[in-house]
Image (cartoon, rainbow, N blue to C red; front, top):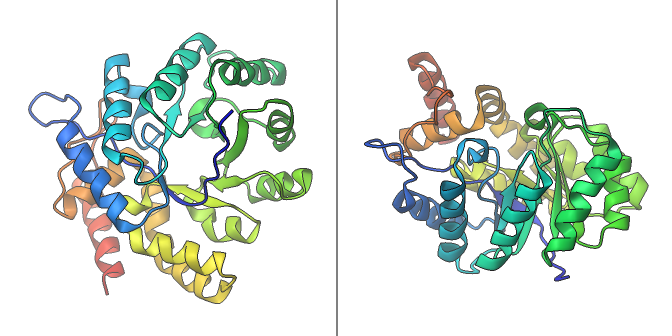
Length: 296
């Protein structure tokens, strides 16, 4: 297995759609990638929840994955998101990510039937056996219907060679502390809950997986740099300055709020895919005021 070390701000790009036909807009996607790389983010994770992974066809998913990996061109590491109901489809997409040159995959198990811990373990084990890439375990019960305990995630890290990172997005800071406790701080874990960014760094998070750099890259980077340097006073000031926006984009739904914010800044990424609707006028005005406040 290829070991890779990721840290810092992992940016989550949206998937742009063309207004005329709703197809994936690869021109806008590559332009957004350039903006993010130039902003200084440390890695990029296309096809996460922000990238509307769940709403893409197989061909669209492959298009976004391949376009992203090819255009990033090793300027920063690429972690391709995979979220599938069946292990077979997850393995197929993991194979594809490896073939196109991704640096890692981030696997979010999704479920119709409630999965046992052993079923989740075997899901990851079979994906890991099929590829050589590092795997980030992604826990996000609000979107996936699967809630993995810190004990299970640490067990998978210990028993499955490729499982080398954890992204914890349940919104429970105690789980991050538990991961640190169970692993003696040896497992790299990433915060996936924007309003917990400050607490997560204090709990020992290796980095922050977030869509916020699409709108406020410098503030997210400032927070990481301050926390990484141990300057928690500066980290707190930076965090609380951006917290109202972080809360808004999370509560409003990341694809729709990030796309609206990009449009307000002059970057047209289309609208979210139905049944998700764009922000209404009142929400857009609230978002505009939040962004304006951060420019002063």
